[in-house]
Length: 425
Image (cartoon, rainbow, N blue to C red):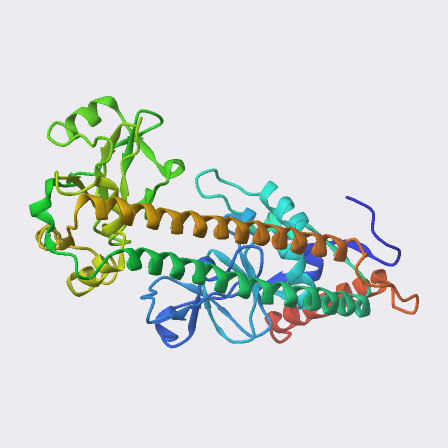
């Protein structure tokens, strides 16, 4: 382990914290908050929106937590998910409710640090769903400064991070404005006075996706579904693959070709992207394939299918809440604007310019976000190297603090043993 400043000590996790496992029947706590790993933002410790045990339909045993606990996700420890709570509730059995003998805020920030995360990820078991078990967690090191220094470090960390949080809020607002600008720009190029026609009348081919689930392989022909299409963009990194035989079987009647429009009709309803050149695609589930007829440009059809003009038609006919989707029959009844081919070309050119401008703005926001995340990591690294606040020689050394913690734990353990032993014969 690396060296520590004078007055600090390394201690195993089990010496300064405890996992308070307390599995309960969720039916006894229907109105309690329910926290799962997906309710915690990675690396920031920010609690995301959550609901109640009843609303989430929880049936299996969960841990009961109380104010002051740190909830640490043992699943995928490389994601660094930990949150400090000031209320009672139930948390997933994939999380550890942790109590601390140190300043709980100090321990929380250590659990979010890159140094601790690297140590925890190195101890993870299982390859399918990595997790850190309790025995491994208990042995991980924790840097322990004097208690008063812990408080000063926490104050400095939170002062810096509050500025980052304000910046993150501004970035999110900026990203939302960019998205709104893109939608507005696309909407502005579609003239409401243009004539409209049923989608089926102006598309020479509308094909629903196969009903059977494809068997995926390591490499082969890319299979496109709603998980890898976004407006105007095919997410190639997310594509999975099917064998050549599966590709042939699925494309006997409808092989996607360049400029066909793939349309998601389930999940993220109404997302559309053109098939790019130089790629063979197999249709997965929950998508449809449109082929523009002679009255429509393929790029204009893509533009229209991603526009608010179409979303206003989707919303009243979307079915389901858990898995929102459109029926094929309803999709075929949609109407699209059909101006002259010249007007279509102009609309596409103007919308493309707006999308490129928005893309540059998003890229700049992403750069700023990455820099902020890097600064957050640097602040935590400085904090746990003793470089963030000045030390005070009057502070009680960490060695004395640790001895006191051990003594208190030993006394508590003896007390529990006495109570369990019962009266003398």
